[in-house]
Length: 304
Length: 303
Image 1 (cartoon, each protein chain N blue to C red):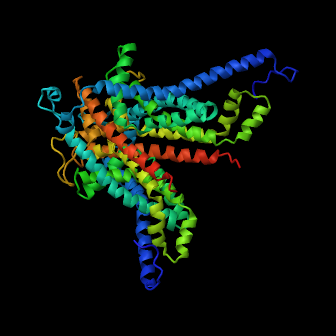
Image 2 (spheres, rainbow over the protein chains, first blue to last red; image 1 turned 45 degrees about the vertical axis):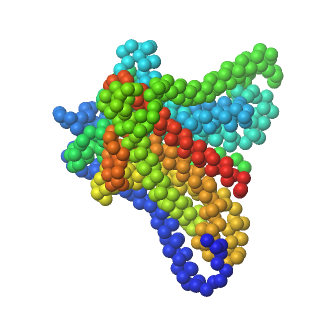
């Protein structure tokens, strides 16, 4: 291609071509909006079909879930319970570990250590989730069985631990960014008052970066809710309301996988239930993502 | 500070100082140990996969279709492996790459170079960041309803690739936007100064300059897509295929699906086969990352 054409002969053609190109690019950007509408439409349409046959009250209040096997029952609570166990369990792993990691990297580690540790942790985020599922089955569950012999092959604890490890980098990386953004003048002021490094970290840096830290928690939790393959492999496919983390459970996503790999015919109630569960999952994660954005803007501290 | 001693003397006593130092050291220790948790977990995961797969990744494993009998995977068996899924994954990612580059770069160019500073533009941008947070399995439902059912593409390679494209598009758009933003305005003005139209400026100045960054971001997004299982599972990828996919509209499998299938089998020996599959998957993923890093380093000096 020759660079800019200096002879402005066909400026009419040029401007028309410019407009055409502009519209092509606009179409690409507008595709993202189309995608959002398509997701909403697909989920709503499928759910309407489902709720034509199943009462919405039964869906959200009863505790038996079995839309593809007789006797059929349509209470989503066991799936929500399973998702909740995984989410809470993984948050218990990832939030303390991730926050402490962020504090270490931002306040204590030398820049050399940081430049090695941060990318290493981000590798965790790049590993396919199916690999985490395998790791839970082949490593974590046998170790759990060593300590608690009654642990099932599929159990909620292994799923929660492995999802927790998976979302550590989300918490640590985003929190570290927020902590590093706290200006040094605040730290120096605190040191000037005689504060120790510990006091500066916990009473100056963490409060000053709290919006970013909280936003990272919400995002990580949202990721845990939507996580699919690791929990399917590790925690099993038994919709089950239990307080015992050593028993198998089923999350909303794991149920969707179960339907996906079985030959459920299009239009059957099992097929429609996919969309009702997908809708519940989508609404849950979307509201968490919006909440995370709101937290970040609501509590943002402005530093010059 | 909350550790106010409350005494009349403004100075801390020696005991207070010692106590504070102890708390400080314990705190650093805990933070350091937490940092190790992630690293140790990564090490354990890789070691576990390496240990389980030891001796199972053979030439036969790469070149044969899967088998239901474990003996076929062992030396002296008839040979069994991951070949159809490996080819399926490569074709899937190649197709996804083609769609993603056009759509992702197009959207990024519009947002960075053309879009007016309007509410509609910021709506598009907020929408893109929201899409990035949608669980991948929901994209699978989208693909199932739109590509497989409405467009009648069936559970085909092309339906899988289109679904993965929509999934990674938000990441690609955001990273391409960053690369475009990094092109200095002086270059654009210089081109306009010699009479180039906006399209010529973009085509001949902005895009060539931003290309390394765009490529890096795209390859990293694709390396995420190659490990995705849930969306292609919903679209209807086969858990096991015995021949490599032969057409864009035909059935397909991919490495994560095959690994999922092996990992679910009750026989313990299949753990080794699943681990061997993971080694192949991670190797491909690592190679893609290496290419991305190479491109970044190769072109970094020229900016």
